[in-house]
Image (cartoon, rainbow, N blue to C red; front, top):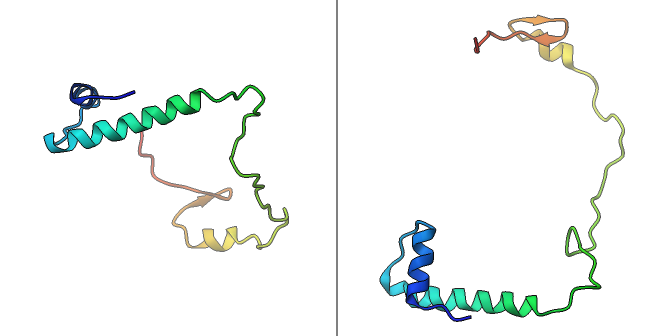
Length: 95
């Protein structure tokens, strides 16, 4: 699919972007190349292709689910201005 000057100007207007007049031929060529690639990909038979969540067969590395730090809540709350039942008290900001 080949786009011309009017197509690029129309697309720019719809996208609410300003483009320089000198750049319009480059935009037309680049957008035409992108649409040609999309057409080429659409012609491929993908009936037997399973959808992928990721193109690589990558697996998330997980760490062991074990506690690695000690509970220091009391130490952190010791410096707080107001604490009640293990919770930080803050001023009300929304009525």
